Length: 484
Image (cartoon, rainbow, N blue to C red; front, top):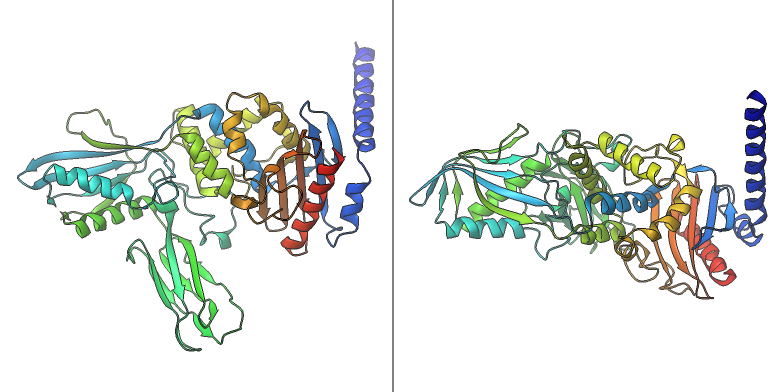
């Protein structure tokens, strides 16, 4: 028995060595030459290319662990499509608890959060669309005054606002908002800055929705002479809605920036209250948020209206084309809540995501996940497994939705400004990735011969400017385009 096990082990090691040798032999010299002759030659590079059958055409460090950045969204978005279904829709409901007395509602209105990330201007022309709809519903009932509270229910998700590993200096910016089951406008306010004064003075600021006092801006910005450089500096005091603005802007400069807010559910309800007041329905009570369990079918709860989101495949398209971390992490918690049947959390969602990876042939013992969007620097996986996944997902029934969710080179999303004057413009559907020191690119390339190959390129630990690195990625993609 021991001899048999030893022979099996030796055979396994031999085959592994043979495979590694084969992969090495299949690496053409052109790609290492492109890298070596670049200004980013001292970074860590991985490149893997496969044909539609899964055969490896190019391999450079493919078996090594990488920080994938937003290339992880390729796997996450596929998991959402598989487990939730392309036609899944979120349902956010308005309940009444009370009764109408003339034109006065004596009681509360409660909004039941469902984890919908799309109650914003991303999918609709007006980010306030839902408040307008619910105003019209209440107005049609004859409500002119609410003698009670507006309550936001956010108990579908846990109360941990961020995945582990997100860096604190990102948390003021739109790509790292708090996550809540009841969210509005991607949990940001949209700041506009106009440097229309004299050098040395402060620029003017406005923000939406309607200069809401939910946030407090401390405007310490300075206008500098024309021709000087814009230096951005925004910081929200953690755990508060006080935002410090300390940018320097050249005279005549116009700047827009979505900045995150604290306590998204309260932000939702505060905006709802102010919108109703603006349209003529006063609220005498308070804005509150709750996490307690409710039996929504119990006596005393009256369903007033339900908003159903657009289907999941449209949300996934936005997620991938815009590389939206907020959508990704919201969907991860929703996935946990729906599949496990408990309060949705990042930790449970990542367990489900790892289960999906395992079921799709990945060695999850070597994978470290801190989030679903790839922004956490501690997130690691093998480039080869990501590349093989692009092959395997082609057999899934939702692949058409998945493929159509990817940005197109030189055309849209995060690839709109890349490959524009390249031979591969409009021939690469893929996902970009970026965090500090990491640039990644994975997807489907239609080659000059008409074949489709799966490409994964990841550069970790680089010190050059990102546009310089993008040119190296472009040269590698163009080489693959002509070679196959």
